Length: 375
Image 1: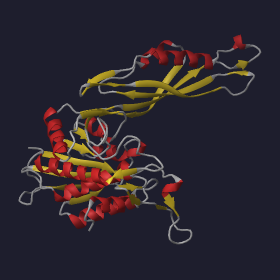
Image 2 (image 1 turned 180 degrees about the vertical axis):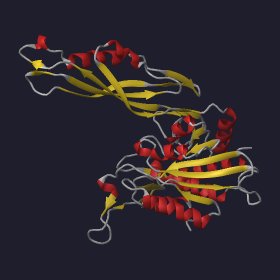
Image 3 (image 1 turned 90 degrees about the horizontal axis):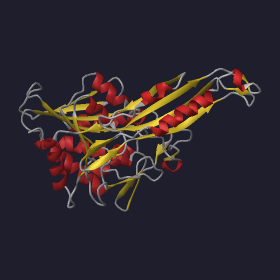
């Protein structure tokens, strides 16, 4: 039994999960089965989902549900975050260290620390009468929300969710805030078609690179969408990030493509139809991670109050610049907020770490919400 959130975090961070989340999912599932009386299941892609009600209620009591949500996949570790296994030729192990009140290791901040805090809160909380408390740790968040999307397709539909992505030190140092909106991301490939010819006779062809540059000019002129949320302006962006075209120095190219990274905001998208005015230009959307906005003011206020009562500083409602699984849940109809221990600049770094004190703060916040909402 892991007695503290620090101990459980160290255990989870030690399990490699950048290529295969199975072992981390095994550890989470086994802990939930041993430490709780919840109904625990592992779905076809490896998500771990547990559900419980008050001991005096059956599985069909009530209609309201609250989920504590995280993910146990991580991005590939830096060389400094791995070591050889104890036996020669064995699989690599993750390095986990604790010093100066912080836990260091791949996934400590993003987001096994939050998963550990949610697991303990789920175990310890008694949900309100007529309500179902859910714990969910998804796979594939780092590669487009694979696990969350699968769960939603299979009927995962909590009424409310607290997603444990980072919200610490957003409004000011030393505070864990509550995120009520974040940007999404569209990845777009634009392809311009032309007619090849010898470069000595450029007029005999149609230069695809020239058409692509015309399209790039249109992208540069697009207005960035923006919405007002939580007293601040959440702005999107559109930027060309890659270009590829041409086959030889003496050939007028018949094809040129470029990629566009668009950061979307709730309810708004850049007007890509402006590209339709350029002949022989087409585009495809390669990835579309949805933005998130919570418009349920009562739920937002309730989570903010729980966060305030779990720390000495005064948290605020804030926005987040990048997409999370909260976008998929929000798109499916779940009222979502984000509250978690990771700080800006910690995730995906070679010295990724998380504060133990903040983990304890998040555990208490999750427990308070789980015991009082839905009300």
